[in-house]
Length: 408
View 1 (cartoon, rainbow, N blue to C red):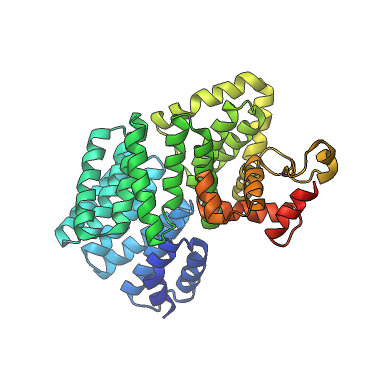
View 2 (tube, rainbow, N blue to C red; view 1 turned 60 degrees about the vertical axis):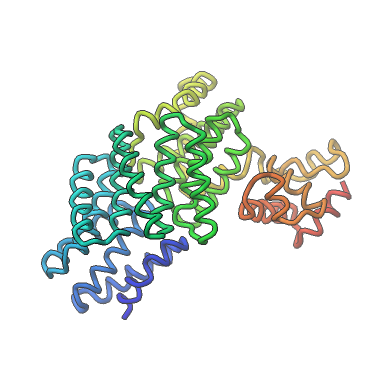
């Protein structure tokens, strides 16, 4: 029964972002029921274990579960659809690890099996996965063709999940090509779709894409807000892969603002997370980061650069995200340090720049929704900032923020 439930709840856990919870339950069920359940029930649970592990960047477990599932489906004769699903999972893992030839082979075999079965939804998903591998091999033309086919099929079927996947990835293709307007439009459509459906499994990916699009267009504040919101979701999901991308985006912003040491720490943290997942940047992706890396090297010097990079690499996922979201101020600095130099009504200086903006609007009586609209961020991001403000100021309610600022 536990395996049945795990297999049935897989898409719910994924869609709502309950990666950690789902993995705990499915792994426990798999361990306790080894050899005692039907092949199909166990195979479905293995599929859930694989794709949840992949989404958290645990590629070793993702591959092991998918390989066991593929052996089981073959030995038990579970059918081509089940076999294709596991080939797709293994193809994803191979692609993330840079084995593009193997990834292409597995995904094309899976695509052929799904086409034969007539499962349009599975075909749409496989087209999206194959397109990502094709992009990594710099064949943008074919990637666009695969995405266009997948989008058309998804709209025909009314499937929000595969449609969102194609919008996000196609938008990323345009981003790498430099068509930032098209990249932004596609990802904004995906963002609207995912928010309406209450999905978390791809929301942080969209936010990361929009962050890069904004950064490359010179809108650093908008980029920062996208990255920060995405990182709060990455922390909740335990997603190392997308966290590394957004950390690098914030590193680029810090580098452009002259905060070289902070930028290098963020680059180091992102580098370590990326290596933990086994992902390698494409030449186009590396080219986006290189100018900012070069800037920090010139500002710090080689010895200091390597030492600071090592400090960033030593951070874990949560520590890196907390550092990225904390701003440049020392949260342990006593509030009285600058109290005499601030005018009444000015938010405390040890709040981050964004927290000071939010605190000022809270004191004016703005709701979180109104603040989100004013600052062009999501309500979730505002919720995060308000929570930090109350904690740092040792307050129990948002109403007290106005009194604290008035006292100053």
